[in-house]
Length: 110
Image (spheres, rainbow, N blue to C red):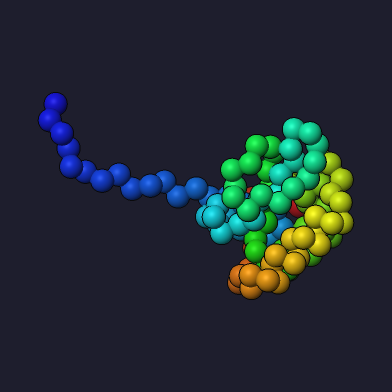
């Protein structure tokens, strides 16, 4: 019943990139959301309300996402070209991360 002086480690939140399938820390990924009003936005804070999908900060992953239409499947809506352009500008401006697509994404029927 006494006070304990233990420090609890924070839980590391992992999310999967929609493009390459790699699991990374949430803060390393860019979140794209579909708001309740059906708008598509880039959420740099990771806290906006809405259904979200994550992508690595890499142009290669962005190209994969566009080719596979992975964001459209995840968010169940057509993604405007402006969103892809905004993502690409952000990725080029911040510098790209090292991202190599993984062989197994954990999905069946690939």
